[in-house]
Image 1 (spheres, helix red, strand yellow):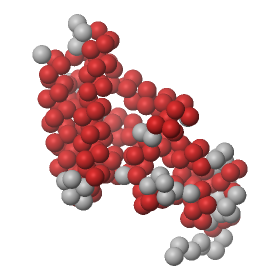
Image 2 (tube, rainbow, N blue to C red; image 1 turned 135 degrees about the vertical axis):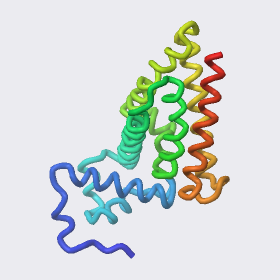
Image 3 (tube, rainbow, N blue to C red; image 1 turned 90 degrees about the vertical axis):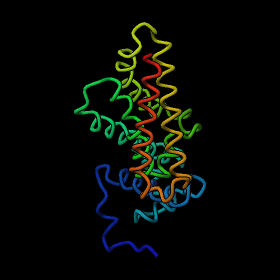
Image 4 (cartoon, rainbow, N blue to C red; image 1 turned 30 degrees about the vertical axis):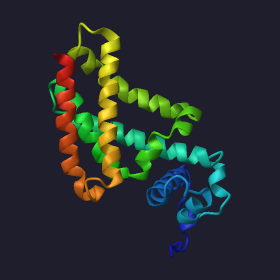
Length: 203
């Protein structure tokens, strides 16, 4: 049973409660999935009244969308960090495989809500964050298929997304064993396969 530390409710101010609720949401979704998530449970874990979250989030989906946006931001940051010292477009695109698998292992349930269709359609900020990730990849895709134009570059990124999200989904399904233990092995496989895919488009 989770208990609230004495005085904990008084520690939330100037936006801290929003961040704490997002963290609690990610914990719950990781444990129970989207269907098992409730705002009241997020409030309980955060140590506030059941009505307090609604001063920051309009409804359940708004809180889930905020949690998904946090995961999206972290994935973008993981990619930027991973490619910081990588020179070639081919290798930078291949790293997407590593990043997606590691993100899936780290966030698990939160990674699922990142691609939740209903949330993405209702919350444009999630689509914007996804486009920001694509915008980071497009220059490298164009560099590798200069004669193919926008259509071929887009197709390359679509194929890359399908491949890397597929590896992430298989990891979370338990196909390779416990996700946390298998993450590095699967990340290496995803990167190798992503590199082969990219090279195929360059041929």
